[in-house]
Amino acid sequence: DLAEKGGYPDFMMKEIHEQPRVVRDTLAGRLTGGTLTIDELDLSHEELNLIDRVYVIACGTSYHAGLVAKQLIEGWARIPTEVEVASEFRYRNPIITPTTLVVAVSQSGETADTLAAIRDARVRGAKVFGITNVVGSPVARESDGVIYTKANKEIAVASTKSFLGQVVSLTLLSMLLAQTKGKLTTSQIKLLFKELADTAEQIETILSDTTAIDEAALACKDACSSLFIGRGLGSAICAEGALKLKEISYLHAESYPAGEMKHGPIALIDEGFPVVAVATQSPTYEKTISNLQESRARGAMVVAIATEGDTEIKKHAEHVIYIPKVRDCFSPITASVPLQLFARAIAVARGCDVDQPRNLAKSVTVE
Ligand code: G6P
Image 1 (cartoon, helix red, strand yellow):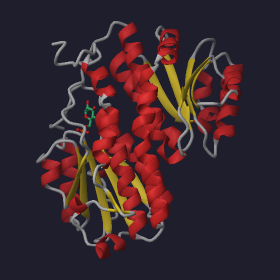
Image 2 (cartoon, rainbow, N blue to C red):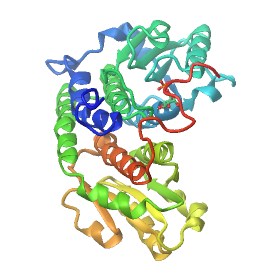
Image 3 (tube, rainbow, N blue to C red):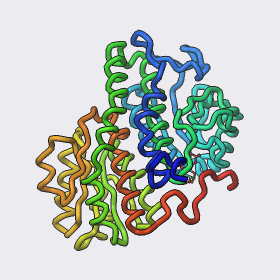
């Protein structure tokens, strides 16, 4: 058993530690002479160039990878993008034309709602790309093109390395769309790709010392509820951080865009209430800091994920977890890792089975 887990105490920990490799494998062979290529997409330059609307469809953790993709596709390629849970998308009447791209994100490639959604989208004439971890899975077979996330088999029910593979793949797809539309130049692509590849090493740095994460987890382990707040991409990462925590530790966690705090969730805060914030360097950093001040004024115990070198943040948080400095667009890749470790440490401290949480299944092939 220990051998299977590669010497780690559980599969989740083993899989968290595989993430630098996932980044490297997902990127291998994608850039030649400043040009990104994803041959498996099987669409001509002209067809790609015509795309004027994107829907990212997924469930669970994969949906959160979609939230990241929306911001990158709109930011770089300037194509209007919506992210929707598959069980909603399939039962409404979305606007689909032949120039609509539907991106189905599914680790297993067999989630019933996601499959039903793409079948319907294809009948309506959309182009469908699958992003999946399982070669030859139904999502792979039934899409016009597929990107494999190269996470290899994921055993822990709560997804970690496949989420990271999804985010890296969607980042590549967003860059490819921008390249096709002429919104990013060759030199911009080269620079971004290099920085994207550098995240593998940055994750290794995060994994090499988890003291601050473990301390913060111990301080939060007896809470009944918690809030995860962030802005922009930080908000998307918080959604995944909160899901991870509730899935494996059964500690209630809710994520909110930080700016929405005052419209409801701030009422929850009393003495010692954990507020986990993604407060890395970004255009909205200062705004997030003021949300931390508001939270602390009401007694919150703030755990902040922050950028290395940011000493200011110590004034606004009980616990600071530093991560290496990256361009904001790549923060989902690095900032997700401490949140996975945080959730796992709390689950372990609460005596939970982190690999097999109650009531959850690795893949949901029935409605
Ligand atoms: C289940 C799993 C989650 C996963 C979700 C979507 O709920 O427990 O970890 O995110 O299904 O699965 P998929 O295979 O489509 O990504």
